[in-house]
Structures are given as structure tokens and as C-alpha cells.
Image (cartoon, rainbow, N blue to C red; front, side, top):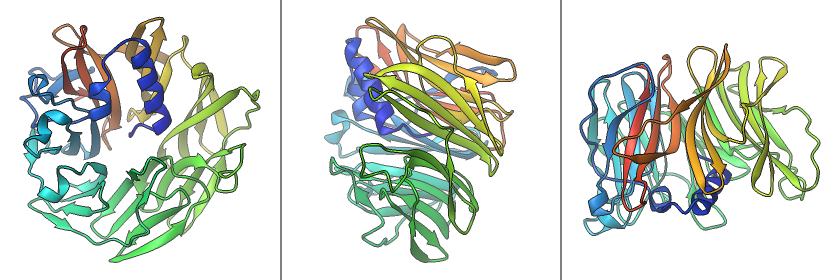
Amino acid sequence: MSMTVARLARMMALIAAAGLSAGGMAAGGAAAAAAARAGAGPGWRIVTTVGSASRGELPGSQVVATSASNAFIYWQCSDGSVATRSFNFIDHWNGRRWVHIALPVRLNYPRYLSGIGASSAKDLWAVTSFGGLYVWNGTSWKNRSIPSWVLTADRAGDLVAKLSVFAPDNAWIFSSPTTAAHYDRGAWHKVSLPATADAVTALAPDDIWAEGITSKSLPTQKPVWTAMHWDGSAWHTLAFPHLKLPASDSAGYQITATGPRDLWALRQVYKSGEVLSVTLLHWTGSWHAIKGPSGSADLSDPAPDGSGGLWMSGIHAAGSTVTWSFYHYGRQGWSQRAVPAEHGARNILWSLTSVPGTRSLWASGVLESHGGDSEIGDLMKYGT
């Protein structure tokens, strides 16, 4: 799951308030992965570290997984590697180990990758900040031309791209607030969206969920959040349960799904940047509301656990102390798990990604020394 802009802003504010270094969070990236830790267990554990604090490589990442034997991780580098013109790094999980994939110049400095998506080990798509689209076929990179309307810059001037790839000839790119680009059998099609695609969960060519602000309310002072579903022929909206809030409060939603009639939505209510309430909404034809965990944790990245429940990352701020935790909702209700760390460093969670067809997940983070003078990326695994 990718981190939303609002979520990243909230995390950066917490880090600043706690007096922690934000370099690893803002910059991202690093070099090839180190050897995996020994001893695979059923719980959360660090399996790989990435980057070198001594070279100033401060990593953050995006993970895409299609099966237990196939995943890609993208690391974006900071100033430490610019001198060598190595800015972006992609590694591939083949079910046994992570293998580095060499990137062509056009996928490297001074470009970063706006988004990646994959359908298999031989079908990885990457969009660059300069508007290029490249596809990895398992042995080499190929440039694929795209119409100018496919990619749109945000208010800061950065290209935004969320990719859902199902096959070499079937993929979606969500960039514009009101339209999506569907690549189908060699041709690009512009598809109008009933809402902004702030988060996307793509399960099958005829089963894509997204959430965002309705197109009609987008230019108004009263945005309306909604879920929407692609059934293979059209997008349909699904309204969230009605929520009446004071003018000083606001609500945010994050979704994940396991099928066309199984949608989860994490709803959080904020006031002046602080979390007032957390509610988990579950739709299986009708909505069911579940009270969030106790405490004031700010939750993010809901990801299916493969057995009917969800994992989430959470931030808890108490004064100058910021704590990152894994939160789980399942048959026994809510539980909280510590984030693994090593060498006396705190582990700053970055993303959570479910492994389709399993009960396993990947998580990425940044290991930061308590003094804040050393940071290195890490990749965690839950399950086998």
C-alpha cells in the first residue's frame, strides 16, 4: 500500500515535533540489498537492510507483490548517491532472495520514479518524474510511448502516478484528478472518474476499488468522500456511511479490498491535526462499523492479512515521544505488535504490502539511531 499525501504530511509533522531527523523519510532510497537475516519465523522480523548511512544513502521505498515468489521494491536515493548518478534502485524478490535490477540512465539521476506496478516477474512498469514509461520484461527495459494526457503534475509540479498492472497489454495509470488512463490491447483509453483516485486497490481487470473526493464536490468547500468500483465496463460509486462533523473537524479515508463485495475503509476524524476517533468500516453488501483500537494512534496502510482481517501501521505521539507499531484487527479484535528494530535504533514504518494468496506481508521502514545521526533502510516480513 502506498502512503497518501495527507498521511505523509501528518507523519512528517510528528517527526518534527519529536525532534527526530526527517532526512530518511523525505529523501528515500539506497543501494543494493544486504544479505537476509537468518531464521525465518511467523511474526514480524527484519529480513534485509538497504543503503549505507556512511554514504548518506537515506532510503524509503515502495513494494509491489504479485505472489509469494514475486515482488519488487523501489528505493529512491538521496544526495549521497547523486555523485555516482545512481538515484533509483529496484530489487526483485524471486521467492528465495532479493536480486538487484540494473536501471538505464533514463530511469536514474536526476529523475525519480513516480510509481511502479507489476503483473509478474516479467512485467514491471515504471513511470519517471520526467513523464517516461518503461517496462521490464525480465531481462531488459523498454520505453513505451504514452499520450501527453496520461500523466498530470500536482500543485507542487510533481508528476503523480498510481499504477495497476494486470498483464503486458492491460494496465491502468491514475494521475489526473478526474480521469484515468486504461491501456488495453495496445491502445490508451481516457476514462472519466466519478471521484479522485487517492488510493487504489486493484484485484483483477474487472475488480478495482478506489477512494477519493467526488468530482462534483472537488471544486467546493465541502468535499464529499466516496468509494468507487470498476466492474470491467464502468465505474460505480459506493457512499461511505453518513458522518456529521463540526466545522472544525475533518475526516480521512483509506481503503483496501479482497473482492468485489468485500471492502474495508479506515476512517479517521481529525481536529487541528490530531486524531479524535478511529473507525474501521467493512462493506459486504452493507456497511458495518467497528470501533478503532484504544489510544490515539494515527493508523495507515490497511492491508489484508489473508484470513479475513487487516494489518495497519500506526503512529502514537505522546509529548516528544513518537512510537511506531503494527496494529491488527481479526477474529479476536484489535491487537498491537512492536516494530522490530536492531542495534539500538528506532524503526520508522514506511509502507505495508500484502502478498496475494498468502497470509504474509512485506513492510518497509527506516532504522534511525536514537541520536538521529545514522539512518538505513530495512525491509520486514510477516509470515513465511
